[in-house]
Length: 326
Image 1 (cartoon, rainbow, N blue to C red):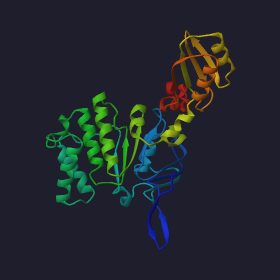
Image 2 (image 1 turned 90 degrees about the vertical axis):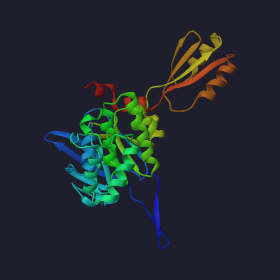
Image 3 (image 1 turned 180 degrees about the vertical axis):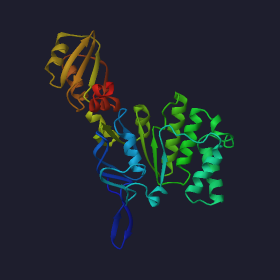
Image 4 (image 1 turned 30 degrees about the vertical axis):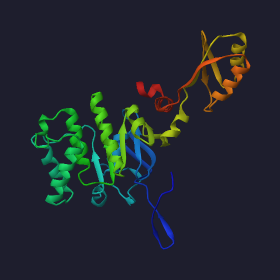
């Protein structure tokens, strides 16, 4: 976690507490251990993806963060304040959109936002101005007075994001904001999340859509069976990937080139025609070394590319295909 500091007090800089600070939190439903001694820190202004297969404990964790569930053990701090269960002082600083939000169908989008604004103690003028601003931001301009019952799935997700932002919160928590959407809807939600981050807010959201996370997040946590398997910068999770390959195409295959690949200790080699695929057992970048070795062997390189090592490969390496199938 990088060091962050707030205003100075005398000659000292006061550290800014994490937006989310979870220490050894566990939660069970009867005999089912949903969250197992979870530790999680999310710095302010991060865009943090919370990943895991169905049943990993993501929604349970989020419900504890927003006060809908109490942990069996451990501690939770949100924006520097300790919380167990509902804490109004913390709740006012959090925006939350649940998975598959269900709102009263007889209300219009503007009416819904007005009700949520009242719950946060906003004045009538504040509610009207903020609701109008959010309706435009989430792409519902001209539809704010329409009944939610007539909204499409994508529109309902948009109004769900709008209600999470009504109080202008410091921390926005979204549970599967793209679930059930078509590709166009997913792009729209992705753009909305990017717009939220531009305002300097911290965004924490769970998702099973790895492509979405990779385009939005700077940090990720991978959860499986209630246990954190990785938590850190997105740029570092690739080191957890088992499946890495270096694919090299040469102009012409010779015995010298084949023998060179056999001398490498970085993994196993497969060859098809003039293409050699090296299944790597290292995270080192060996392209320069391979290039020099092939040149010395009289080879001419037509193309060289790395494969694997991204978020999807790392996720599968951490979770295991067996967990996804179960």
